[in-house]
Length: 474
View 1 (cartoon, rainbow, N blue to C red):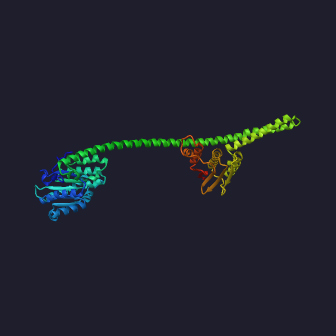
View 2: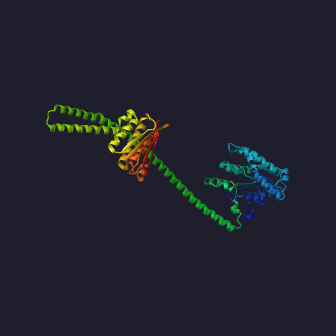
View 3: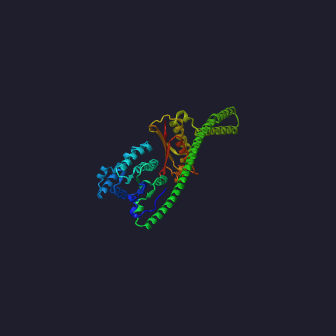
C-alpha cells in the first residue's frame, strides 16, 4: 500500500483540488467517525472544484447529498447552475450500485458501462485541461451490508476505470463498521487499493504533530493490548473446548454407568426371582417331604420311649420352622403374588408379614383400585416399598408406617411415611449423586425410578420421613 506523508492540518480532511496530480487522476480513502467531519471536507473538495470550473460527481446517500447541498449553497455556490451545465452530477449511491451488481457482486462490464458513461458526461461538460473529481460511497454500502469481497472488488474496478478515464476519486467509510477482529485483513486490502489513506477525525483533529505522534504511540500500545487479549481469548476458547470435550466424556461415562446400573438392577431382580423359585420349588418341597417322612416315622414309633418321641417332635418343629423361613425368604426375594395378583394384594401381604417380623404397625390406604400395570412398574414400586420399610425398621426408630398407593390419570405413585427421627442430610445428599459411601439404598431407589422415567421424592425432618415414588403406568 502506498500512502503519502502526513499532510498539514489544513489539508487533512480531503485532498485539496490544487494538489491533484497533473494527470488529474488519483484514488484516496477516508475513514470517519462523525458525518460532519466528512461533510466539511467534501464541502471544500467539491465546492473548490465547482468554483474553479471543474466537474464534480457525487455518488452518496440521500442524507449526505442533502447535507452537502446545504453546505455548498451556504458558501454561495449555485449547484443548480452547475447541474444545468452538466458539471455537477449528484446521484444516489444505492440506485447506481444496483445497475451493475449481479448476484451480490459487481459485474466488470456493467460497471464500465454505467460509471464510464457518467465520467464521460462530466468530462464532456468542461473544457480541455479541466479536472473531474468524484466522491463515492457505494463501497461503504457494500461493506455495511457485509459484502466485504464485493467492496474490495469495486475499489479495484474504480482503479481499472481510472486507466481509461481521467478523474480523481475520493471514497469514505464509517470507521465504526471495522470493529471486528476479522475486519483487519479486508481493511488492509481496502487501504492497498488507494494511493492515500486519511485516518478518522479522532486523529486528524489533533492540533499538533506532537499530539499526532502521541496518538500513534497510544494506538500501538492498544494494538499490543489487543494482541494480548486476542491470545488470551484464543487460550480461553481452547480451554473451553477442552472442558466441553471433558464434559461430553463425563456425560458419556455417566450414561454408561447408568446403563450398567440399570442392567445390574435387572440382573438382581432376575436372580432374586430365580432364587425365590429355587427355594420355593426345590428346598421347600424337600423340607415338606422330610416333614412328611418324620410324621410317618413318628406314627410307626407310637410305642417308642418318651425320649425318642421328644426327639421326633423337636425334629418336626425344626422342619416347620425351616419351611416357614424358606417360604418367607422366597417371597421376600420375589413374591409370586406380585406376578399372579398384582400390587394391591402383594403390598397387603407384604405389610402383614413386615408388621409381624418387625413389630412396626402398618396401615395401607388405596383411595381407588389400581388394577394391573406393566410388570416393570409393579416391580419397581414393590422394591421401593421394601427398601423404605427396611430403612424404617433399621434406622428411623418409628413404631408406625403408613403406605398409600395412588393412581391418577396415567401416573402411579406410592407414598411411605413414618414418624421416626428422619434421614440425616448427608445421606439425602449422597442419594442424589453417583458416588459416596452412604445412602446406597436411597441411590438404588432413585436409579430404579430414573430407569423407568419416573421420579423419587424424599422429604425428611424432625416429624418423620415421606418417600414418594411416581412413574408412568402406561
